[in-house]
Amino acid sequence: MNPDYPWLHLPATAVDEAARELLGWHLTANGVTVRLTEVEAYSGLGEDPASHAHRGPTARNEVMFGPAGRLYVYQIYGMHFCANVVCGEPGRAAAVLLRAGEVVAGLETARQRRPAARKDSGLAAGPAKLMQVLALNRAANDTSVIDGTGPATLTPGSSPAGSIAAGPRVGVTSALDVPWRFWIAGDPTVSTYRRHTPRVRA
Image (cartoon, rainbow, N blue to C red):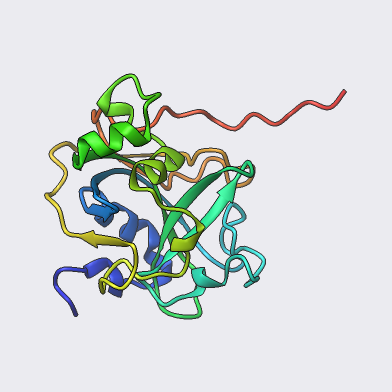
């Protein structure tokens, strides 16, 4: 086992544990480094109705089925990108959505990429914002974050200074109350929680 990447060797059934372990890690891409402060876990086939992999592999989600240590990138609202780190053994889908982080290197570059951010704490306070400051898009899909061959690299950081909090995931329409969103309690870079509210049809 690689002692520097213990989450790589966890089974898909322990994706929530992998998510917790990723808090405090550093993700570096295109001149900016972000310390992860908020993540969400998603399980696989038939186990998690909120997961893209719930109904099995497709051309879109096949990277979720392994191997671990690769990025699963998808687009939302036709314009924003979100990144997940694949976890678990090949053939068993599991991934951790990277929700928010603190810019710890390349601050001026991050500010240029997110000029609308009022505070530095808001530069990467959300999954799409995080991707924007790192200048990552769909081209990063199915690339490694552990061997240096991809545009982004994950490296061990410091252990979270605060306690780790857990709560419902954001923006999902199924399994709303599964407490698989994890964040560093009290960290100002964590995104604002908004529970999904189903639209009422007239």
